[in-house]
Image (cartoon, rainbow, N blue to C red):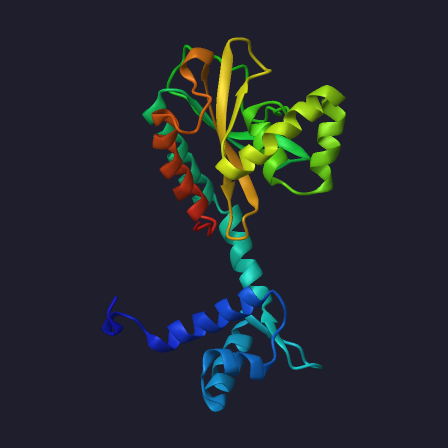
Length: 247
């Protein structure tokens, strides 16, 4: 993109915000100046402007700079906005159209994964689930949350629902699921039905939700290298990009 099509001062301001964000700690004025190369007088103006806007915070005692509350407000509105949910639903419909199979979005609610959106153009396939259905740890969606969500609520959820043998069997799968961003399961909810699932991640590599594709066992591939799965992966990547994931 040419310089004539951008505003250089805005770009510089965003670079300062990115620098502070990547530091994962508060930064001193001298650190920011050394790493950006901006003159002290200009950097003071940038930081003062960003501080007044609330996107950067200056500690009144130490004088250090960190990200401001306004960014949290922006992020909260983005994640919880109806527009985001509508965009995710459109992606679900795209996967449903591509696969002709039930496609669902699950979120972590009340310490367990719950179906929040469903796209299904195949009225003849009843997956035994609907909006607000809780999914178990051995479902493909459940496996995704076990693999990617790192907090005590996941461990407690597994303890409540899995036997010792089941827990150990699932543990053997987790490294591969984390590596491939893909899980397969013969669904415990309905006989002769299987599913595959994928994590939706954010810019911090934290899970925001999981997408599941559900169908008859003979139609659902168990391996990530299948053409079926490979056609879905670019769509999943676009869904994660909504939340800033770019790997």
